[in-house]
Amino acid sequence: MKIISVVGARPNFMKIAPFIKALKKFSNEKVQIQHLLVHTGQHYDVRMSEAFFRALDIPQPDINLQVGSGSHAEQLGRTMIAFEKVLLEHKPDWVVVVGDVNATLSCTVIAKRLHIKVCHIEAGLRSGDMRMPEEINRLVTDRLSDLLLTPDRLSSENLRKEGTPEEKIRFVGNIMIDTLEANKEKAQGLSIKSVIHNNIAEGTSLPTEIPLDETYALMTLHRPSNVDHEDICVPLMKFLMDEAASELPIIWPIHPRTKKQLQLFGLWGLVKGHPSLILLEPIGYHEMMRLNIGAKVMLTDSGGLQEECCVLGTPCLTLRWNTERPITLRENDGASVLVGNNVDRIRKEFFQTLSMNRQPSRPELWDGHTAQRIVEAIIESSPMVENEIQNVLK
Ligand code: UD1
Image (spheres, rainbow, N blue to C red):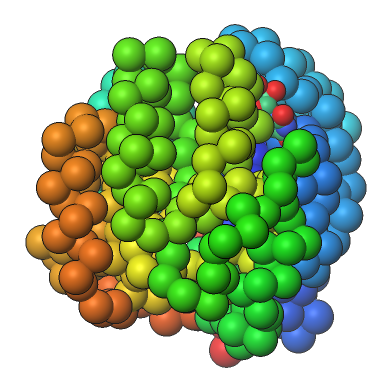
């Protein structure tokens, strides 16, 4: 059996790592699986891409499409043109896509045009917000995929409501948690001080009076809905600088998109000179987990961090009005609360959250063994003769 799996942007890498390991295990012991890894090249900075390959022990991509930055149309189009050539040359039985980035959508569309089966890992998530590029990516990918592997039962239910045939849906758990479990010990062994010192953002310096062993908040921000519009981004920054950062230092690994926007709005100087904001370059997987484990509170618009906070128990303010990951919300025993980008609402929840303790929770099948269930599901859904499948799964 020949499988091509696809990654494009940072949140894909921690999802593909355990899948590739599980494939290797199955391939050696039970069945011949030929695997090729394609990187579309949407994320290309060392810190956004290569560092994750090294830290998570992901093999070098067999093919890099080098699509780079650009508008959505440019990214999608360039990926489709390049990926079509890859498929025509290698003719895989399956294309495996993960998550909801532009690579997920474009590679699914082209694979289906060439009648190749698609397996979507992390299927069924829905925010209901059609202004999010990721929501469109999720909808189209799920509509076209042959095997839809969901991280939780709510996602399976979303697919049923949309009329997805039952035999295509498999609830396998959350593959990100495989990576979290496999790397937690290593992350815990890092020192917070050295994580900070080794990753200070270019052109900034560590505010000297900050006691790094004490309580801090951790923040990430990159969604277009938060950083692309001046009328939203500016008040948010003012709240962070004038109010939140007076309560406790905020450690903030900055996404390239956000830095560009802050420069555009003339805020970069203020942000980088603030005595209680610790600005870091985009940091590695273990470094982020270490900071998460020690944080008093997380402020984020990232879906992946919402999930990691849930399992690690970090109280999390999700700076969005909706989420495709409702299982992580406090109302479902998770750690996260939706606060949108309205400053009054963020202020209220921020100060309440400071008095909360860590409360880890573990949704069903977020057990570190999702990758194995995924490989089994692919093998079971492959056109092999019945007794061959039985041998493989024995
Ligand atoms: C993408 C994903 C988003 C994911 C996020 C995580 C889509 C639609 N969005 O958004 O779901 O949460 O990645 O990071 O796929 N840039 C660099 N260096 C890089 C990569 C990007 O400087 O290595 C710059 C680009 O030039 C661009 C900006 O960052 O200006 C945004 O990058 P892009 O890949 O378009 O989208 P993200 O916002 O990262």
